[in-house]
Length: 607
Image 1: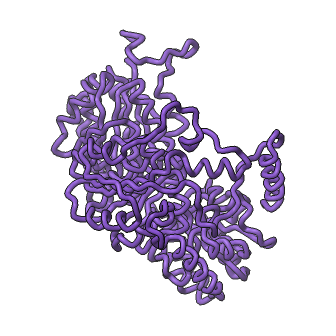
Image 2: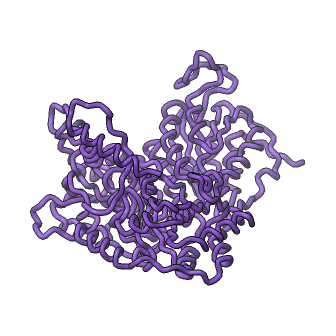
Image 3: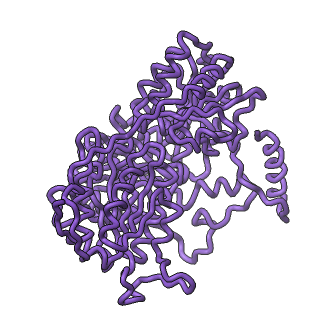
């Protein structure tokens, strides 16, 4: 057996550089790195050695550069991914939040935090967490519950099993998620005689499981017996590349579609059988159809509470759930009929088995009525001096967008209103991280999206609260020449949670700056801040000025930031659904007691 002598870190990077997808691209498109004493000598030197084959990017924060990597993978339907490396201690711990985000959203990312010395010679090393009762415990154990696969590399030869396992998980449609290889820093530098065959080119094919015959027969029987079926399109439709298959299926069988946050843009917004976004942040049209449905067909959805209205939405007493999902865990939720299969293959086989059966589609008038309301709240204000609403900002961005625009967001007010109001025409033109709803994902995520698809316009919608959480990768976007447009809506605090606080009977407290204990008023010049990081930026005072600034941003050569003040209180006033947010049973305030009474009444509607 021929061998090659390499350090463990060199072997890891050489292996990574030789792993490919079915389209002929390296599966790991690059490595985000912030070097410290736990990875600079080992992994840093190894990355330098493969720099012509595996590009290294330097971010500003370990969490945000991991967000960029995750967004990259999501925008490319999990066909490619990125790796992220950090030092030990705080650098590693910073990535835990990103790992949780990837875990919730079923997205691949390879995390390689440095770890303590395996030989324990300098124990305790700088930044080492000492557990008084467990000598093997380090900060990196925090990754275990938020990783699909976790391994601690304590000997070089462990890579021979750990790396193939890592890639198996990242390329498995059912198991896909974050992988953490906790890399002891002394081991990174240790040499070993690795088999040359270990570094041969390998192609990872993402399997498309076919449904079990019995499950398929049961699913077909359930659809044939239904009178008012509805399809809930989830993110799995995108990951499977099943958008065209879904379109063909619904047109043949005349079954209406409603979309989750992850599934939005699976079907063009103006398709006659797309009844819009569903659930808590949904459209009236979609929720009316869902309430009446006697068969809820989930395709690639995990049935999050925002989708189901905390399981109060599907009210038909004869309602059954059919869950087409590549992951058995998701297909069995709430006593669903499981159809474990790839979304595209599953829909194709369902359609063939159903033959020419079709249903009477819901009345299109309910959809028309919803979009009339949506158009009213997103229209430009007649009074140019009034403080704009977030809905009007969305309208301005929509009017300025082109067919290839990707709008993205993650947390705060915008996710709900974008889900309700944004008109997504093409697949993957709507990118929302709403599984973890992580504040701070937005700018880093926009960077990752643009790196994944350089030819598309990327518009990042972010509130002032999320911008303050994490904005540093704006400087990275400028440095890398990655042109994104960032629209900051400044409502001077956490407007979304302030409204939720009020809706549950709470007093306005500690969310908007006006209701905090701050001694000095908060007046942040976001445009100046963005400019200091090298972005082209300006603050606008009206919707008309916003639209003009968005048009000008197309000709910019660097990332552009546009800031606009908005009113923190208005909501669309239509659409949406109940969401289970527990209200205190006992309070000295009448508002809370009234909200509790309404809450208890709503609980009775849940199935």
